[in-house]
Amino acid sequence: MVDSGEACLNRLFKDQNVNNNNFDIVIINTHLFDIPGLDIAKEIHKKIPNQMIVIVTTTSREHIFNGQLDISGIDRECILTIPFRFSDLVSLIKSNKKT
Image (cartoon, rainbow, N blue to C red):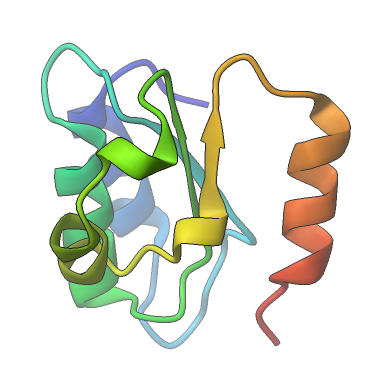
């Protein structure tokens, strides 16, 4: 767990070998203080296209443009609106598990 977008990218890419995915899932809040969550997802998707990313946000899914999601490599189903139930996160992970 990290507390900023920059720390997320540093940790992921420092610990990450593109051929050896060390993280099963990356959960990103869209409203971070330094880098917007969708921009972080975009950077991750560029380097690790198969990385499972879940976006958590206070913005409803309907207000996030498809273009933003496409560029970020995020499926609309991988967005959880805050507040959400832990069981929703577990279900999402189980249904979208990358092999």
